[in-house]
Length: 346
Image 1 (tube, rainbow, N blue to C red):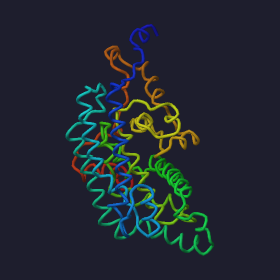
Image 2: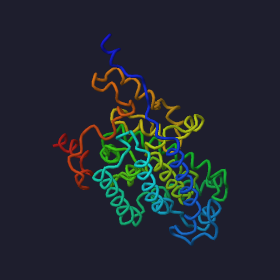
Image 3: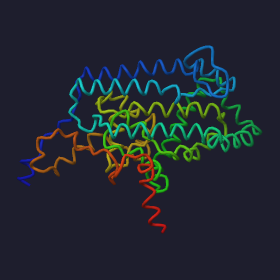
Image 4: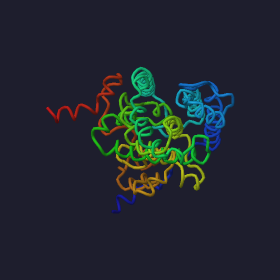
């Protein structure tokens, strides 16, 4: 209509200053380099620390029966990068409201992450909830039939292939967590934040990490349990840095292959259930669940009110869950998505 044509603004994506984007990416690369190096040296579970750092040290640790704990090793860098992001957000005067920090929201995300790691340390690890079923299949099927010989833990191609296989399994786990109500009751906690920054990555469910292992059981037919656990942790850590509004787009070849901040912002839009990959976005392109960030924003132009005509258009990305959070108290946020199912059953 004429009226809509008058108020429809031109598409202007919010792009942080190039220096801020570059600084954030460089901070991520520097942190990742240090994290990869020190984890085998200082963060080994169930075995001796490696004598070398980096991937050679990780391979050495796995061969000796130890599991490089990439998640534990990354925690200091999570905190450093959050501080870097906060400083750059302030200095760059980031236009995107959703990319800023709010004390209550960020604190709630941190509390969820801390509590989740406590439950992992006190329940999941001692009971070996995810490893026992996996190890049972590996030692009762893979080893007796010789399938384990196809995936020696001292082979770099096996490590690379396993990492891709872990990411493929994660895609289906993540997609299912959005499509099955019982699983969404756990995973939905991650989507409660109404802001999109690195603290959001730490907002995790108490129990979802104890159920996702089911999707990785096919790997037990040939992949050693320690190698699986190691690379599953590394895959989880990669996903931390994509929770930022400070990085607009990476070079297009990388955008086509990798999960990036642009792709994951779409995933956190409360109206969209797309882009489920962890490390790679190609799974979404292959299985019809991909949506580009520009395609998420542009169609909304025609539905803007006249008073909104001058708003920068990235602001119409709506972070958070569709049902509002009534309290940032940890037990309340963790139980929010269980309530509808409880009412339906009763």
